[in-house]
Length: 108
Length: 108
DNA sequence: GGAATATATCAAATTATCTTGATATATCAA
DNA sequence: TTGATATATCAAGATAATTTGATATATTCC
Image (cartoon, rainbow over all chains, first blue to last red; front, side, top):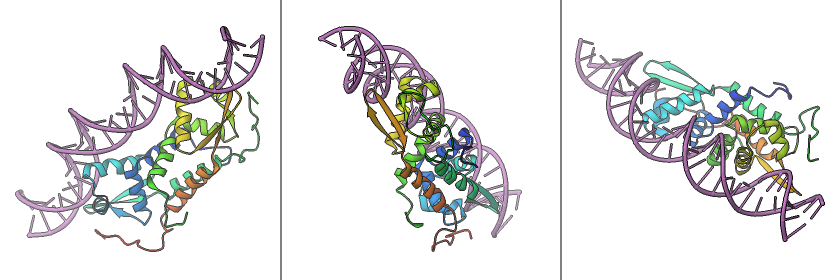
């Protein structure tokens, strides 16, 4: 991603929406230590099973986590690429990164 | 922010919520070129005045932008520190950044 | 002061998201 | 094959965010 090509706005909005909920941020925090199975997340978060499942799906649909089944357990892990892109977005968007067209169009 | 101290979850959730809307991301994109007055944003975004005002307030309440009045105009600008913290969050949360406690507690 | 312009706020209606409880599906173990 | 466990999905209700139109406030210009 170059400094003039910000990611697709819709895609970025989905990342940020996925991260806009405290329960999901807790999940992300837990996954930052490595892959975890749903049952462990449920234990730690002490939250209704369907609710956890809903939040995991939200994170997955946004592309922030991946899952894999192993027998009767399902493991979730953070997607490093998505986190890289988010970090890149935040740093690319900082004023001063753009070459041209920094003039104001009015009221100046 | 160290690699073991993620930012306050509630504060992070507010950042991400502020960035979870396409209109607000457009605003951020426009402000990435530098400070802009509300009237210019309104022109470019072609959106109802109260709606733009609502979204600017949302960004401001989350700490992502600041405003200053100059006569009859109000200028908004991105807060670089907040963007830095977001980038830092995204990179700190990546697996492998944490020293200890990476073992799984169950199903392993 | 009064009109005009820029912006913010408010209330109501709409829409989206979240939670809960119930049920479905998949896997394993006996 | 039956029962148990892990996880996902669904539908209904609860809550929260967004949009719209109306009105309020601040500033400038005459």
